[in-house]
Amino acid sequence: MSTIAAISTPSGIGGIAVVRLSGPEAFAIASHHLTLPKPDASRPAASFSRFRKDGNLIDEVVVTLFRAPHSYTGDDTVEISCHGSLYVQQTILQTLIDSGARLAEPGEFTRKAFLNGKLNLSQAEAVADLIDSTNATSHRLAISQLRGGYAKELEQLRQQLVDLTALLELELDFSEEDVEFADRRRLHSLASQIYTRIIALRESFHMGNALKRGIPVAIIGRPNAGKSSLLNALLRDNRAIVSDIPGTTRDTIEETFVVKGTPFRIIDTAGLRHSDDPIETLGIQRTIETVVQADIILYVHDATQPFLQALDDLQELQDIRTFKDKHLFIVNNKMDLVQENPIAPYRTFPISAKNGTGLEDLTSALARIASTDFAQAPDVMLTNVRHYDALGHVEQALLHVAKGLADRLPADLVAIDLRDALHHLGTITGQVTSDEVLGSIFSRFCVGK
Image (cartoon, rainbow, N blue to C red; front, side, top):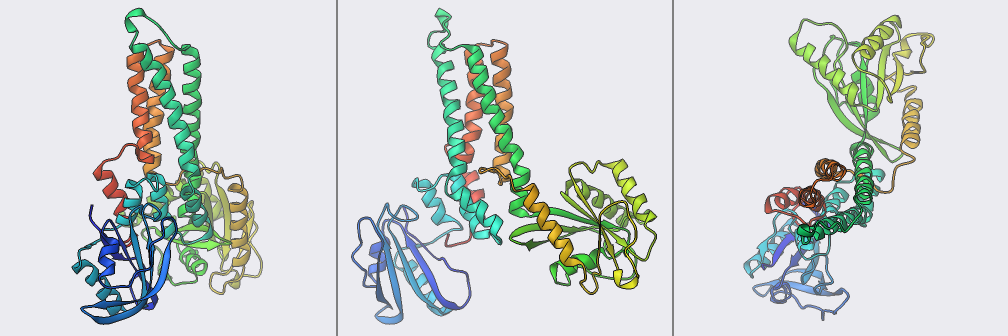
């Protein structure tokens, strides 16, 4: 087992930086260059020290020791808090490597924690989500998963599947006597209960993914209605090109902004109109696809134009795809050019993307939708697409189990499907792993974590 080292703080100059060293030789390697505190058996030990290379002072540091297994990785670990000079950071790291450590790969410290049983795989993935969290909602989801509520739910499901498998496989030992150790109707009921919970978890993915990545909001409307101007106004940045030339936006532009701690993934789209330009036509098709995927639709109408145009557009979209379960807002833009808000058979938000008037009412309405639609969010939610895919396989396997029990198939055939369900459930928590899967997961991490 190698001893690894890396800089665990972001690259660049700062007040302090942390160099992390972990593995069986961590204390020995560090002791060549530092005076170490006496390692405590169960708690960190920290002290002031001086880091030296070839007898020359490199920096005055604070060194903290974590004795295995009481560390993040489960191995002996040394953390060196030095000044944030790039030269100091790199010199300390290179010195540790020259003394026998190896430069850590992305996510290798967390991978060690997983392999040493400090975290299960879903918790390890939550570490990456926590690092990437940019708002209160994504932070809350990552913390919830890191604390293990989601993993506990999966472990309960896994244990129920194990119990079912054990009962069926017990019959195999007495197959010649034609013995059944369990009531098949009872087994079918238990399998159905597990299946129902798997379905509920998969259905929570839409909500969990929306809260993690941002509630999808599509901005649609006619060319030159001010869609890109609205995007820029909401982001308070000139993200999209604004032009008086119709058809400037040919593709979707996606950005995230936060309202009262809730992220919204807002998507600017190509203007709705009939066009002979093949590129613009493709952009309009993507607009329709975006509408299908969005939870909230902001139809931007040019307040200087007749509202009948908007009615025609909305009717055409409804004929193509249903607006069921979607929130539709009519945004009357360019109110700085008219005297009154155009009459519409929908609730409208009169705004001027140019000078910012009316935007506060619009963002407040978005926040109310988030608080209403997501107020009843379950304690355990699915946010990871890999987990969503694995649970899909579990769902299919359980369908085969239920059918096999109902059709009174032999226990060995039903047990095959149960073991398949267990396999895919285990890929989420880490009972079943491969180097390829682990490499894919931990490659998303930064070096030093």
